[in-house]
Image (cartoon, rainbow, N blue to C red):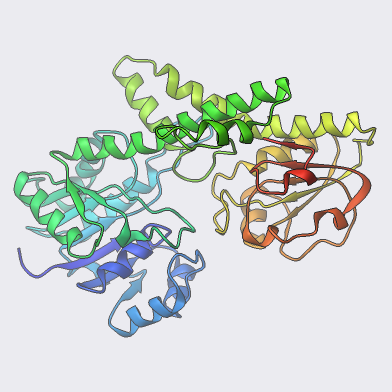
Length: 421
């Protein structure tokens, strides 16, 4: 194959770090349909905070380009698709972003080129759903005129330790030879190494079970939390004791949101159902985790009633709104479930999150978020996200004399807290 020239399609949490990394070794162009996003990147700032400004500016100075112009990627020969794969309102996989990205690839791909998909899907989507779109638009024949690969993303948003190059990468190709080539391209920039899977379906399946496994394990400890709460036992203390065994898995209870763990199991479940199998454990885990926000809200209400606090028109402070700590990503955050459940009691809710972008929260959820320290007095506070900024927060000063503190994350000093999840 001729010299590698890479186009990364989709410049979000996954695409931008990968494109920036590729640009250290190959001529790389990042493509995205979001004009304001591309303009911000070319000005040297990543609003997702996944790529530091200095790294981004240095990459641009050395030839890295971000563009919304499809003509800029026509000369590339190695296309990488990193668009999101969400679920719809009924938790069915929504492949619309993948279809659109495949159409984009079809408009620019040429003989001998390779397209690699990184978006999380169920086994078979790349070959059965995406590549036929590329064929239709391009007029080229898969595995004759152009080739493909699948290399599942493993980005962990907000994690500055396990960055893209430090996470081992699974690779695969549509033929054995293409698999080796795809693996060589990734291994040239991934310092943690790569694992060449025998087929694209195996690589797809490996990705979707990674997050399904975490979802099920978190669902288990969430159920334990409900059980131990009724027994008057602190779940975190139980987990700490059990964790002294060498092979005990260190999962903790909590909200399960974001664009991976709370979504990927639905992709696997739908795939299983297509083959006539009803995945009981996977879907049971999803039901458990999707109900935790409402459970937290109900526990807070019970605690307030036990203390004689008037619930209707009370003031409740929610600390954190993003789907995880120290990250501005609000996609599929389950904190919104706590807020919705509390609003049913006509409670006045203040959401304080120094990381979340207020305009994004208003656009996605119709809720107001403040980024500055609140000054009012509250009847209850819920620590929903363990941002570093909350570690030194004097919560008591924000509360009325009669109050409730609920800690979803087990983050606060236990002596301050009325109950932990």
